[in-house]
Structure formats: structure tokens, C-alpha cells
Image (cartoon, rainbow over all chains, first blue to last red; front, top):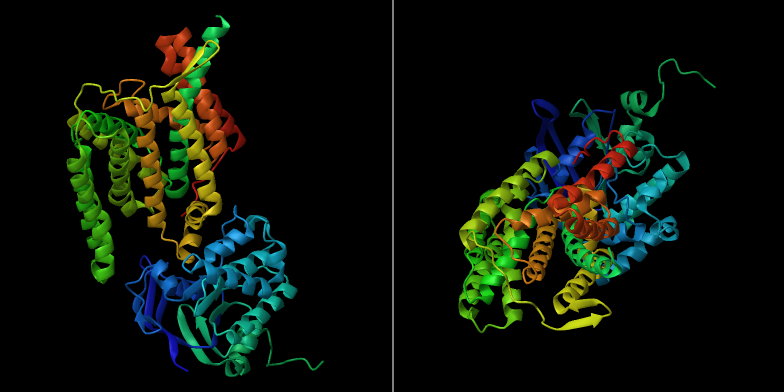
Length: 243
Length: 346
């Protein structure tokens, strides 16, 4: 497996405050990688900087191309896609228009095929295709945001907290679909607070605390780590009750 | 007042209102996509009208040289901002748009200009010249500050208005100009006489409104422009260049402005600074439409035109006062309906 995204020794600052310090990570083709960590650890900041929304210091390459001189639009064209935490949908436009715009850089004939694939993945969106995006429920909006990103046929999909604020049954649905994406040849970089769900579908994981990676390894290793279990998975190993 | 006078005033008001509607729509379009309140819209009107009038008189308007100069500056800016990642494709594309296009336009104008040039050619040249100026105006004055607040953009817009108005005096002189009418035909219906010119105004206004509706509702570029207006970050994340959206919006606005000017200049004499007042009336309509609603803006523009026609009959000294007064009740109502609106973050 060759590396699709490589980030090495990256620093990201808001003014004088460094939110991410000396972080390195890589995502290979056909791989799901997750970054878990508490609120404010710098996970979203890292994704936004990889996408070009925030400036970063350090090296970042995608499919062999240096990302630093590229703006957001060029990064999208090279196959990188971000579903941001706030989804950034076109609220006053309908579901179909949102999806069509997701394929803005793709030939129209290809887009027509992609939209059927997205509808197959999210049948709910097909039912609501004439509804305005702003009137959808939270879960549907998340599906639309992911569908819109997939319309651009990305090589790497970056998801920022896809489960935030959603009902557990919808979260399960979304994670199931994320794991299906790998089979369709899309790599995923997933940022999550819901560590348990993320570690179940991921191949590898990084644990982020206060702007730095404190731990990395396969998802199984990370899930088995006692510190991680205590901090992020809600398990108590010491003094656990024997029910 | 008898019915005939009332009908005349109505007809006059609707003709002017149709022009204001075009300008109002352009303002709404530009504001929605770029958040710029396009004060220089009036200069697009004057530049279009007076360039057309000069071309019709067999002279080369100074605006075409301005287009070339602005193109050179725009090219320089493109190179400067892309200096860290200069690629041949980028430079060629920028050179084609910013250098080749206006220089070709200049050459074409010199080659074609003359007292016997067909009217359609003169109109096309005038529209192209103003389109180029509109395009470069966005690139030079607004694209570098596209991320700033509405207030900063407004100040830049006022600056552009003053600069373009001053240049207008240089190009066209202080004397007013008139252009030849599109058609000398006339239709009589009862007491009313419809000139070919006023019919052309109605037809083009309706055509533009239908055209814009089709463009925004059914084409990918039109939808991309709407998307940029709704959510800039969302648009960038699907690969829509917001700078390109801004350029298209300015291009449309400048063409609409120039066309309005070409439609008016056979009816009234235009001076280098007349455009501002005409643009302001389109602005009133746009404000009544809340700077978001196209249909409301079009209706409001017709109302502005009719109010203007009647007030110029009854109280011509207070004509402008009455028209601009229309904005006050609307602003009061709107401020009551939405007490505290924070500026949306980009």
C-alpha cells in the first residue's frame, strides 16, 4: 500500500497560539485512519489545514504532489475532499442541486452515474431529492454532506465528527457506510470524539491530546490500550466492578 | 388630471422602471455572490451609453484604452498572487483573458469604427468594452479583499465609483451625448404611442429576467453562483472558485448596466455623471427587495419608475426627494421585522 496523504512535522497556529505542534501522519490507499481525542485537541484544525482552509507550516503531500502551494479548489481537483464539522451545505437549494454541485469539477455524464451511486448508498436522499437542504434533519444533512463530497469522486475523504449530535441509530448507519467506502476504493481520514465507533471501523488510529499525537498504531492496539480505554472508551480497568 | 395624462405617466414610469429593474437585479446578483454593494453600477450605465454614442459618431471612446490598462494591471496582480506557484497554464490563461482579450478589442474597435459602422456592431463593441472593464474591476479592486467585511467592500465600491466617474469626465467630456435610437418604428394604441425604443426596453428587460431565471435555475454555472451566495466555504469545498463566481457576477452586472445605458441614451441626454443617479434608483429597488429577492426587486423597480413619473408631473422640484423617500418606510419596516442582524461570518 502506498501513502496517499503524508503530513510531516506540521505546525498550525491561530495567530500566536499554536493549536497543532509537530504532527506527522500518513494515510495509505484503501485505508481508514482515525484521529481520536478530546474536544479542543486540534483534530479539526489539522483537517482544515490539510484542506487548505487554514495555513500550515511543515510538509504535506497528497498523491505525490506538494499541497502547500495549492488552494482549496486545487486540492479538491486533486482528489481530496472534506466534510466539515458544520457540513457547509447549500441550505436554500434542494438535495439534488447540492449533489450536482458536488460534481462541479466532474463531466456531466460521469456526474449522472455518481448521483445514482450516492442514492444507492443513501436511499433517504433520493426520497428527499426535491427538499431544501436546510429543512433536512441532522442525520439527513450529514448524509447529504457525505454524498456531496462523494459526488466529486475523491481519492481521500476527510470526515470531521460525522456523528456529532446524531441519534445512535443514525450514527451506526453512517459508520456502516464509511466502512463500505473502503470497498469502493475511497480512503477515509476520520476525526471522531466517538472513539469506540471510530476504532471499530478504522485500520489505524492516532490519539491526539493538546495539539500533539500521543499514541498511534493499529485500531486494535489503540482500542486495547488501557490509557485510551480509560480516557476515551469509558472503561474502568482499576477497581472495576464484577457484574 | 385626465386619463390620457395618467396613461402617459404610467407608460413613462414603466419604461424607466424596466431600466431600474435591470439595474436592481444586477445589484442583487452582485451582492448575493460577492457581498459588494455595487455603487459603480451607475458608471457601467454611463460607460455603456456614452461609448455607444461615441462609436455611433465614428469616434474611438477612451473606455477601450481603459480596458487595456486595467487588463495589464489585472495580469500583474494575477502574476503577483501566484508568484509562489507560477505554472505555465496559469500564466497563459491569465494572459489570454487580461492581455489578449482587451488588446484584440482595442484593435477591433480601431478597425471597425467609422460613421457608417452598423448599429449592431457599435452596440456589441460598447457591451464588450464595458464587460471587460467590469471583469477587471472585480479582479483589481474586489478580489484581493473578497474575504473582508461588507463595510470594507462598500468603501472600495465608493472609491471605484469616484475613480470611474472622474475617468468618465476625461473620456467623454462635460458635455452630454445622445445616441441613435435602436428603431424608429412606432405603434399607436388609443391615445398612447409606443416608440420602437420603449418596446425594445420592455422586450430586453423581460428577456434578461427570463434569461437570468433560466441561468440560475438550470445551468451548472448559475447554480454554482447561487451556491457561492449561499455558502462560500461550502462552494470552495466542492471546487467552485469563488473568485470566478465574483468575476461572472461582475461581468453580468457590467453587461446589464451597459445595456441599460444603451437603451436610455437615445431617450435622454446622458452626462458622465448621470449614471450614479440612475444606479441609485435601481439601488432603491434592490433595497426594497432586501438585496436578496429578484422578483420583489423587479416589482419595486416598476413602482419606483411610476412614482418618479407621477412626482415629476406634480412636483418636479421634489422628484428625486419623493423617489428616495420610498426607501424610508421600507427600512423602518425591515428593521422592525428583524431587530438585530449580526453580519454573517465568512
